Length: 219
Image (cartoon, rainbow, N blue to C red):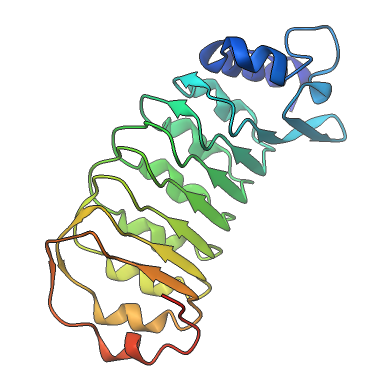
């Protein structure tokens, strides 16, 4: 990654999301110092690999140009007031391990391009206004151990493909508009410590016996 595209992507992010408060809380932005010295930015060998802009009351849309930061492994934009959709260009960030976009006002569907993020261990999309169904391609993200989709407006059934994610520790799907029954295959997630589906009034049927026998579950 050359420095010019990297700096451009960060400046685009700044102009899309900045607020008056963020200017004082995130020093260094727009100054001549190397972008690796900007507040919330971390680098390895002068290449940006982490952005932490969580909890700054940021507003605006996540820009498509964020996809230029192809060495990014950690992206924290949670607990702000971001609007608009999740850009499909995030799917270009194939080194991502943590993607945290929860507690915002994001709309639209979960883009299929995120299915390319096979290194993801943590995916937080909770407490937004996301619609559409839970994508079946989530089963491709076999490194996941935290999957938070709760507090949205997701519809449809719980895909049986989630049963492939045997490394999952926390699976939160509560407070959506999910329908159908719990797939029997969900019982294969024997490493879960927490599983949430309450607040989906249209879910029906009985709890699979495999879930009752989970030994690690706390809720």
